[in-house]
View (tube, rainbow, N blue to C red):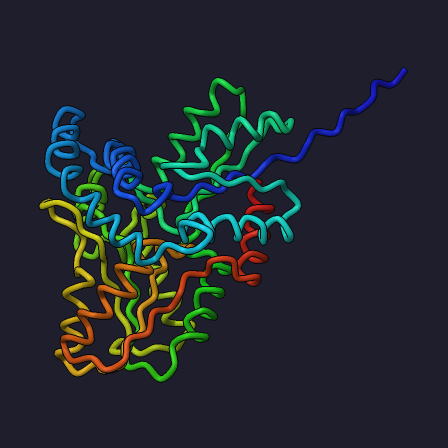
Length: 341
């Protein structure tokens, strides 16, 4: 008698985004910041020193300021990042042949809870999808390591979607979003989340390429698979080429510096003021390090940077929203994950 063939259940997809406090109240923001900043991939210094900096120098002061910032962008249905991620997951489910789950690296829904749900639903294989186009220790790596830790006792097999900074679908939809919002602007600035310089050199497996060689990001190397700086430059150049921008019409910079360590430059806050002083009157900013709008894009970019640019002499400031739950983006991303799962 021929044995019956048991059809294996298709793997699940787990989207992982950064996270958000439960509310804009100071207590909730403090709990969120403690979990976030105590992550050794975020503040990558020895635990005792990290504990002292976070608990004695950051948490007594920063939660109140951050809570005020969150209050400015909080929506009726909660945190914009959670709302945008949930809506994207729902839209993605319409195009993908796989079951879509989502989680947050910090806060709720947690990665552990999502993987337990996946296990209970009968899945054995999971494609972990960090929702960041560019590879970085403090975003991609910490999300993957958290998933590995939670998956091990459940017996789940994990695959990881690589950084998609140069994926044709991502670039195509990024360009379409820029075209929808940027109209007759003098300059388009691609502003990316900043990183300490040491994160770039730490991610270099050779310890001899990143920031160790002249024009390191332009030299072909396997190191680029984990080099955030190279990847943001490539995203910028691919989008600018598709938009037919001239060199004087675009640039890239880095935002959100924390602490006194050396960070990637140029800094966006200084860059936008300099643009205004150089005669740029109409500026459009896009934040391609994120695919879902959040505190950093809605408050820091659209409010703080707007104020800096206009105060420096600029006339019109346009914020180009993240892709969020755009249908074209969801369809393109479904094709990418279905091919990778």
